[in-house]
Amino acid sequence: MFLDIVSIVIGIFVVLKGADFLTDGAVSLAQRAGIPEMVIGLTVVALGTSMPELFVSLTSAIQGTTDLAVANVVGSNIFNVLLIAGTAAAVAPMTISKGTVRRDIPVAVGASLILLIFGIYGEISRWAGALFVFLLISYMVYAVKTASADDESDVEDKKLTIFGALIRLVGGLACLVFGSNAFVGAATDVAASLGVSDAVIGLTIVAGGTSLPELATSVVAARKGQSAIAMGNVIGSCVYNILLIIGVTGLISPMVIGGITPLDFGMMMLSIVLLWLFSFTKYEVERWEGFVMLILFAGYMAYLVYTV
Image (cartoon, rainbow, N blue to C red):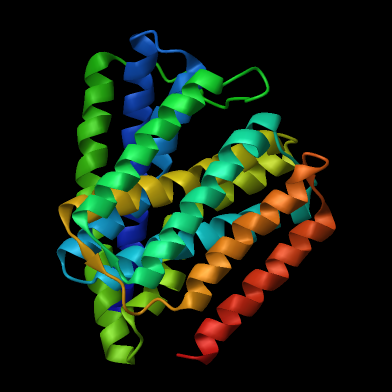
C-alpha cells in the first residue's frame, strides 16, 4: 500500500511536469512558425493543459479500467468548475470575457449534455469517439475564427531553440507515458485493496491530481487580477476534457460505462450550467457565488466518501 501511494504521488508529479515540458516545446515551435498568439492559446496551450487527463484516461482504458477513464473526465470537470473556479472567485470576483460566456461556456454545456446522454446509454463506441473528435475540430475552427480582442491570452514568450523545443516535446511525451502508467497502476491497486471502485478513485484522487495545474494557475491569476484568463482556461479545459479525451480514448479503446452514477453525470452538468448562470448577466462570478460552488463541491465529495 505504501509503495502504491508513493507511485501515485510520483506519477502525478511526472505527468504534470511532462505536460509542462510538452506545452513549452509546442508553444515555442508555434511561435517560431509565426502562428498568432491567440491561435496558440486556443489550440496548443489548451491541448497541453489537457494532456494529463488524456494520458491517464487513455492508459486506463487500454488497461481495461474504463470506469477510471470516464470518471477522470467527469471528475476533472467537476473539480474545474466547482473547486477551481469556486476557489478563484472566493479569493477575488472573477471577470469572464464575453467570448468565454458567448462561445466557450455554451460549447461546454453542449459537450457535457452529449456526454451525459452517452453516460446514460452506458457505452462510448468508436463511432461515438469519432463524433467527439469531429465536434472538437469544429470547435477549434470556430474558436479561432471568432477569437477577438476580449479573449485575452497569457501565452508567454517561450522561444526556445528548435533543438531545445524538440527535446522538451520528446521528454514531455515520455514523462506523460511513464507517469500515467505508474499513476493508473497504483491507483487501481489502491482501489482494489480498499474495496473502492475505479469510478470513485477516478472521480476523486485521479481527477484531483490531474486538475492541480488549473487550480494553481487560476488562484494565482485571480490574486493578480487576471481572472478572465483563469476562467477562460478553466472552461476551455472542460471542453477539451470531454471532446478530446473521450473522443480519442473512445476511438482507440471503446469504453463501457458501469460504475459512474447518474448523480455524477448530473453534478458535472449542474456545475457548468450553474457557472453559466452566474456569469451570464454581469460577466462576473462574485465571491458569494464562488462560496456556493465550493459548498456544492464539498457536499458532493462528502457524499462520495460516505458511500464508499
